[in-house]
Amino acid sequence: MIRFENLTKSFWVKGERRVLIDDLTLTLPTGRSLALLGRNGAGKSTLLQMIAGTMRPDHGRIISDGTISWPVGFGGSFHRDLTGAQNVRFIARIYGVDTESLLAFVDDFAELGKFYHMPVSSYSSGMRSRLTFGASMGIRFDTYLVDEVTAVGDASFRRKSRAVFIDRMRHSSAIMVSHSMSQLRQFCNAGVVLENGQMQYFDDLDEAIACHEAMMV
Image 1 (cartoon, one colour):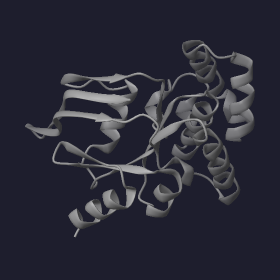
Image 2: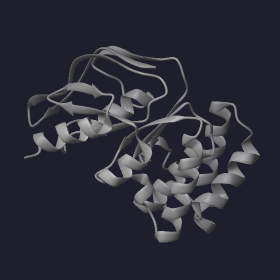
Image 3: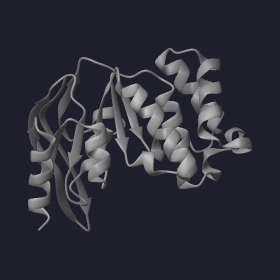
Image 4: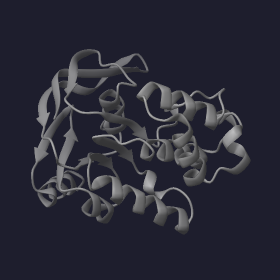
């Protein structure tokens, strides 16, 4: 269960306050993998960061009864001046998992080679996504937050990413942002549509996609 209580988030843009999340109160059910839908700029990535706790709301709070990953694919999850391996070591300590096992998993999965031991500031955006995805998949969370990351890398890496994500979904749920409706249908079984600072939950994924597509016309 993830519950939003009077959640509000805004940013100042060119001297004007732009509200992305507007006094949102909603409960997302346990055990459902959700497609997070909305037009570009609706606030999807902002919402993921607040759910993960990497961004604070202006007002309100988010309550959960399970463990939640950081937003996979969000490079801000890691310290730029530390190496990939140092970041993973720090994460292992924070989440209380075996450090050496997580280091080995990410090293093998992310395929960063010598860059694993170089500062994250030297990484391309794709390399950062591979690091964050690998570290996230190396820890068993109740809910994974995913933002387009399974599209990173060549065909072989994408197949590997999908395989490990499918394995995690056997015992966990997800909130996923993707422009690929086929990918959402593969991994999700319900949906939420974010529009004008409010969010509507659909227990039927196809209804959520239809609502989203109707708004985009």
